[in-house]
Structures are given as structure tokens and as C-alpha cells.
Image (cartoon, rainbow, N blue to C red; front, side):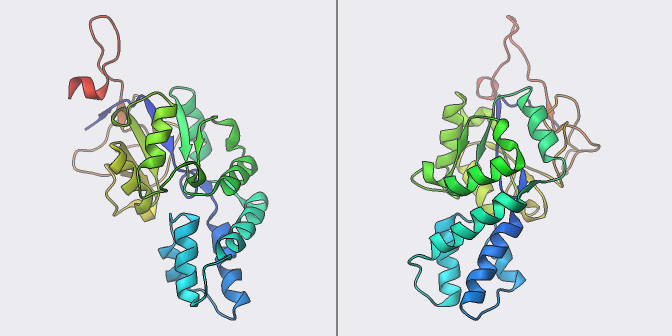
Length: 244
């Protein structure tokens, strides 16, 4: 099956467009090390997609320490690491740039503004769009729908006519709550509640050609899972809400 071409696309940043896992992992590992502890891989996996407040609370609980000041400690290290080591994921830059050439795009990240801006600058993704929503810009970060709703409003589209691209269950929950179609990308999203799943992004992900196998979660070949939307007699594309 195929889906109507969306009117806009909102990308998550960390884990979807940019590889910042090492930045977060280093910040958490250093926080553990300062307190004479070692963080294991399973706990790192549990932190995937969390905003700074939730991440800091989890780390504080695991270390049995006060969370006061821990968020700033973690953020300082993350920003330093992002400036040095943040990179785009394979295929992500090409996908984002190809999409931005066809459709309005935004970036919605659970990162604080300082970390999001550092990541976008280090990876060159800051040139992609002027619409970027951070956790500092909304009352409630993901898994609440606030930042996706705000991103769609900034792009002047209804969430029902937009697609979110996410790598984490936390982000997928947020986008679904906003009423968007959700594309899950990568292993963390494989078993989440996304509408469709892709192993990775490609330049043709949001091109009108290509199909999605009925009952499957990945394209039959490298290409889009979308098709061009139907048009009215006047030649105007119908929105998804207009034709059910």
C-alpha cells in the first residue's frame, strides 16, 4: 500500500538525523564515574529519547543522589561533546535535504535549546530549516504532543496532514498523540507504535514514487512509502482530511 504525500515533514533530531548517542552516553558515564559508579549498557538503552529533565531524574534515582544541579552537569557535558562529535546518521542528511527541496520541514527535539543548537551547528543541519522546536520551547516535552503540535502550527499545516520521523518510542508516542502519521526509523523504533517502520532513511523516502508492501513494515525497494496526493478538478491537491 501507499500513503498520500504529506504536506509537511517534522524530523526528530537525536537518533533520527544526528548521531549524538555518544554525547549522551559520555555525559552519563562521567556523572556515574564522579560518584564512583559505572553505568551499564541496559541503563543507557532505557534513556533513549528522554528529555533532559526525565533523563536527569532517572540518573539521580539510579545513583541515589539529589537531582539538584545534575541536569546542568549533564547538559554541560552533552553540549561540549556535541560540538566535537555530533554527526549525521547515514542517509539522514540526504533524506532531509531532498525532503526540504519538496516539502516544508521542521525539526522537533527533546533536547534543550543549547544542545539542539550545538548539534545542528556541528552537523550542518542548521541550514535545513528555520523551524526548530526544542524542549525549552514547550510546556511539556515528548511524550506529550506539544512540540509536534507547535511545529505543525509553525509550518501552517494540520498535524493530520503531516508526517513525523522518529527513532524512539517516546517520540513516536508524542507524534501519534498530536494526530500525525509516524515513520519509525532504526532498531529502537522497530517494535514501537509507528504507522510504518524503516531500517534507515534514504533520499527517496518522501518521493512520490515507491510503495510499501501490504502488511509489511519496510519498502519493497529503496524508495518512498508515499505517493502523490489526488487532486481536485481544479488541480488542487486534496488534503488527507478532505478525502477521509
